[in-house]
Length: 425
Ligand code: ZN
Image 1: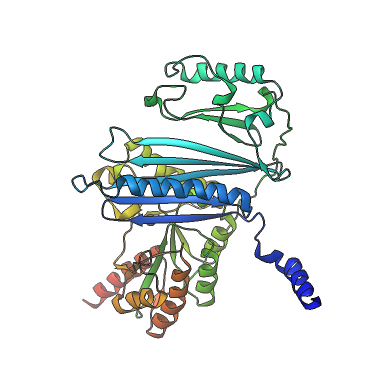
Image 2: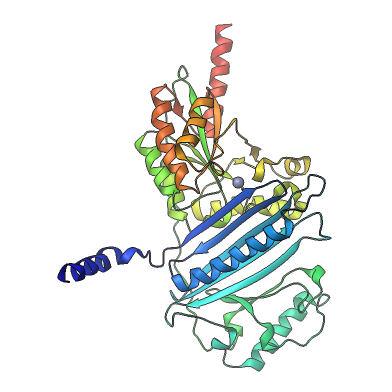
């Protein structure tokens, strides 16, 4: 009995019984099938009650989409589900999560957009509705109506907004944003109606503290890496991250004097800021893989630009870093994509199929058996098996004389080797 109690005590004090309290992560599902493609990013907070509800919501969306679209065959046009999110924490207490659903299919007249939000109070350990945070319903509704009228006059179906219409909102440290799904208070062609109102204009029953912490921008020392032009090189590239496995990969690469290129999703930058800073400090490269993994070649020009530019903006703002390369989602390239970005497009020569093959030995042997000098290997840092495969690939190829370089270093090497060759002529 004593032993049991001691174990329990140790477990609670040392490890919190395995609970990673308030540790935000992002769970990623990216799949490509015969008729459908799916990209889902779901934030997790370490708070079981909240994570369970949010995860069930996105899982249900996944199941519904698969059921409705997996057998829809339209002239080689796949149907697409994309789930994106925003996350914020105010007063170190109120967590706001917004989940955006986007369905695009040739069987639809227009893509479907919808939103759902979750507000969780860490103190009361419960979800909040708008009623829990306002003290004057009438004043709130008048303010919201004013904003709606100012910004969406031509979209509104009528001017009768009720408290029960205010289902979806998120808190920020200076404002509250309210969302209305298409065809609820406005015509569906206007999409999701979004209004942001400063907290100073709202009759709130809670006090929201402004976050005055100014984050200092990181600076990086120029890394000088010597690459032997007489030895082969290979560029490992990782898509769809960062994730909880990325830091382990970054550390392993450092221990092995290897660098790689990570084609990241912009919507994960805020949560994995520190991992990304370490990544750059260690001499790795960051590339752009879109903001939320929408199928770029299928988007309107405005949305396409938005998906690419938002990554450039957030990496500059948070990481003091500007990606030079774009890896298009699902490897898709067309004229519209090329003419809407100045970034150089980078694909791959060796596909490890790590998203499909669930065995790290098989993933590693695909890479090792197929690679040749100057190749770019495609992997995904969103799986533990990929980290396990990296631990096999790097030492084996190093033994064969390979140097692990970033895409930029690979391009320099190729240029240098061209010059060397012409010297010999
Ligand atoms: Zn991808």
